[in-house]
Figure 1 (cartoon, rainbow, N blue to C red):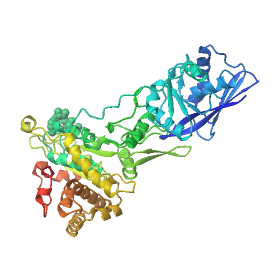
Figure 2 (figure 1 turned 135 degrees about the vertical axis):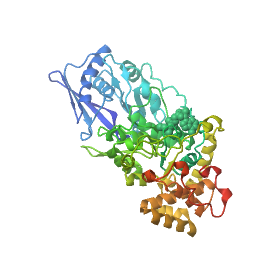
Figure 3 (figure 1 turned 180 degrees about the vertical axis):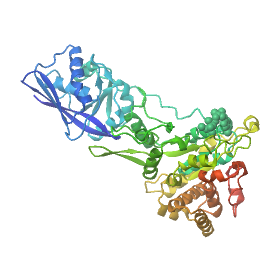
Length: 534
Ligand SMILES: Nc1ncnc2c1ncn2[C@@H]1O[C@H](COP(=O)(O)OP(=O)(O)O)[C@@H](O)[C@H]1O
Ligand SMILES: [Mg+2]
């Protein structure tokens, strides 16, 4: 008799239903798995046989044929162990008829029949609900994560024995225990950062509009410290965002046993030795750092040290907010809507322009170092800030900075102005606007546009830079609660473009840079006091 049960494969971050068909034939004993199964799935036969025998049951002394459909989808991983085991036992008549109906199974078996967690439980749960199944049976360790999905009966089992009892009408499997909501409160706060008012302001603008940020400054001035605090001023994730983020981390196998929904925004800080596959994801469909940072922050410390090819490939997701991976069987997509925060030293030794230390780098060395950052990449980073070293006085005597909570409040209200404007569209923040949309939404005054035109001309900037400057100005206006982009909003936005790091080797110390490009033209008081270079 042939029986069929359902499991799922994870492709990208999507679960795809896989029907597991089992037939037992009167031929010489053997197990055959067909349907484009990778070797990890073919090895399943040995694990399943041992696990079944360990329950005191007989393995059929016949030919067992297992077909995984659809046949054109490559099946990988160990999650098919459990559905194959229950399929074989149902086909052998060891389970009541109808025991498999409306149920989805996934789980890896040990030789003794214990169930081990699988990757992508949340994606499988969303798939099971969409597929119209009533119950999803998973290993206990990943059941809590699947239980986030409403409208689906999720059960967690520790062993094959427990699953068989449940299906046979014996002891029923428990619904997973309610997980404690993960703390969304970070253990870091902006209050700990002294001074660096200019960088703090740029960070607030970046958070308020979803812009990318580059910080350039000598070692130990607080770049890493500031970057790690960007998630603490971003708005809290919505439930839908949290599901998307949890799903990606679950597919990557990064969720600890028993964990539920992720509440804190991701902060990913890959080392500069990272490969392309590590950054963007691999053909085996492991999400890369760009996707793990989805709805959070991707922090690239020591930006010029990254392989150039890796940085160049990041341009795609910076523009499209997703990663598309090509492989033999079609493509898979991973979302990658992250905020890029990057840091760099001004030169290889780090002390170019330092007021108290001398820099030993030649002009050529500085040029080569910063020249590793291509124009097109820098073009996509809207805010460039230079940080001066913090003085001993500042570290010891300065009052603590403003808290993350206070800054987040302003960020949230600026974002709510944006969402009110975007009503009826899929846009989330100013950074998502197209060039056309931003020109319309900025409602910039003619004086502001005049200033922008002069700046673009003077610095020979691209059309993309033009749109990005206008977006930053729109965000500055949103932080101020202004309807239209005024000249002083644009003037502030231009400050964050005025000092591309590649110009730096020709410059004096950052602290000796000229004053801000322009003063507010009409309303001085409306500009935040932190908005000016100290
Ligand atoms: N502005 C600052 N305020 C308070 N502490 C600071 C500041 N800058 C640096 N520090 C201290 O120095 C350490 C190193 O700073 P870090 O952020 O790693 O510097 P960078 O990344 O610029 O090299 C921090 O852990 C912190 O203790
Ligand atoms: Mg650092």
